[in-house]
Length: 402
Image 1: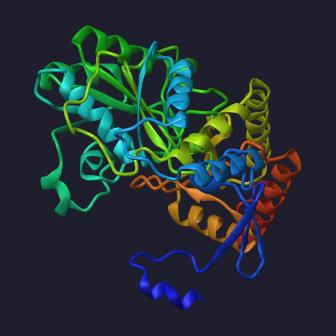
Image 2: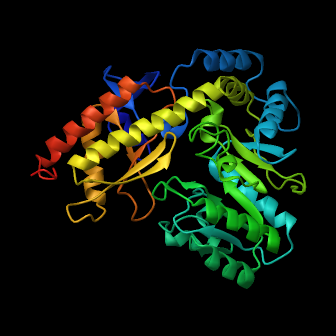
Image 3: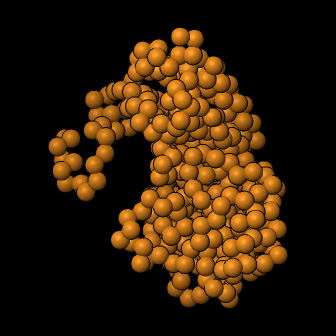
């Protein structure tokens, strides 16, 4: 079966995944893998959640697809739910099927709203997608042949002074940012910086777009991480986990923002099974579960700190909730992409799935972003394997006590 990969444009790991249950994946040879990525941070309640599965099957039997011209009950109910949970009062919701489309939608809304240069500011190490529009506001790893398709985008340093200077110089329509830069080193922005950005946007009439595609709906023990930062963005983009494993993304924006006719619409933007799945997921996203996310996150950080005392390879520990990263460094304390890649490969050989940052030059950050339902026993097991890998890979060479 693996030989059929010759028909695919992009190559993957030589593993054929067959099914999932809880926090585990099983391949076609019935090998069991502990998934610490939650399928790219989407399966927050794990694989095979019965309530989500029932909601999807029920909706598929009733109506698997509907044009955006009409309403469905799941769409109406979900829009209300998101609006009520959002930091944006009476926010208006729009749906799509992937994060790049959500962020492009937010950018279009900002361009419609403000008469100005049409420029979009973004922060260094930010990641917002791989379509032409979002590549322009993403870390610069892209194929330079595509650059002629980019919009007018200006990179800012992560400090208020540089951002204000560029607002004055370019008269931008918007600034887009992640509160924790998920693909850019797993670095949280400071509370003061985000507060300053909000104040600058208000002062200069710039739309503040907060990309919460990775952070919203439980991953960081908040429904929206904007609440933790105590800011009210003009537009928030969301997705990943909120679909309960189904593709579902979108924007929520202040009522003053509008699309013009046919600005942003897609055939499958109205996908009732994903909306039914999302409603089933959100019903299970209780305060009790969110508190467990916080406690598990601190437990994992402490496990990394314990390793850090023994192994020089473990560098800075970053993030919050179950959106965590740890830098992998060499004996001199220099970040090492090569070592990080070796650890991920060895973990996979031991049937534990981990991942690295993809931002250019920042691939030395090891991500720990499992399903929210991961147990303490499973966390302990993952660290048992990680320490085994460190011993196996480096034969004690990186152990501080030697």
